[in-house]
Length: 147
Image (tube, rainbow, N blue to C red):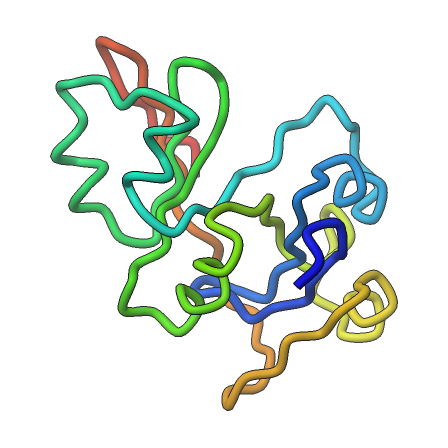
């Protein structure tokens, strides 16, 4: 599997475009390159390589499901549940930037997603749009619900 490709995948939350290159994803979605894109990671061990979880939120992060956290360093990560069908794909890379497979502010359009990706990963389930992960911003002292 090529780390530099754009993958169209049914994630555990919605249809997504995944890549190691967050700039490519920003260009595809026609959004500012300064806007950060979440990274999906395969485990808490991988998460620890990129950020530190504040002690008061370690239990919350470990027990959360389908939740993206924005950490004090400004980066956002979502640990993919190892029981989900998406975990098998993400574990081949350990971490990938992940964003919904639609133009910014628009609904999912298969033709747009198909034309925007280099590789389409089909699974036994068809592609379907559902709500994205909830987002919490955590600092060393407080948390704030973003979505």
